[in-house]
Image (tube, rainbow, N blue to C red; front, top):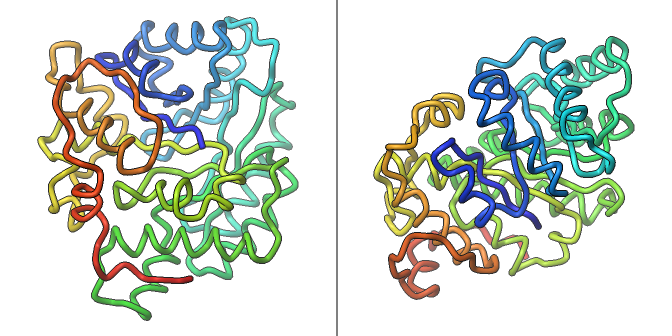
Length: 306
């Protein structure tokens, strides 16, 4: 599984060290030229890039497609597998998202790179239907973290656990069910959108590696958001609540003079607790022992499904 953290200008160059690929937020490509040029150079150097329009002040669809095509042209992209764009979606809207993808494909000519569709729904049945309906149109399938389906399911089964736990264990359960149903194939891999508990990805990488074979990529800005807001990943409060703000606001307001030490430290902790290979980052802070971190970040009442 390859991980990327959406990074502000202050961390873009260093992000090559801690990101396994690069994740572009489309509305920012039309802003600071340094941001745009970073992704042009990434593609020129053969790094993988995912471009996402998101739902926070997204570009108009025509402008979004123009930005993708410009990136392809300026980078002289020759390997269409190195660039993936995300189809528009309606949060929790199962049929609406499928309809939007069909309209998108009818309106715009084929874009010479890979596409990703994100499943949506307010119940597990909706999510299964969404997976089935969008499957023919995309090269990758995105699995969101903030689906109402997870919240409603665990509100009935385990109402005492936190929202982050409901989201985390809901997505884990969903992917397990898809796996056991035989729906997952390596030719159409999964992508995990954002993260619930900070150690969620370790579940797929370490505890149930058979699932990670079908998860190609994941993205989360969470270690950076928490870091620049003074929240450490070795602080138990992160299990109960997070600093929440839009990616656009976070990436735009973190200028080069902004302290990012804690954000980088959070990324190091993130890799440890998720059993990811260590990276050489500039922060010199010493990490606690892995088992100590795990005891803090893995709740004692986490649902057991096997």
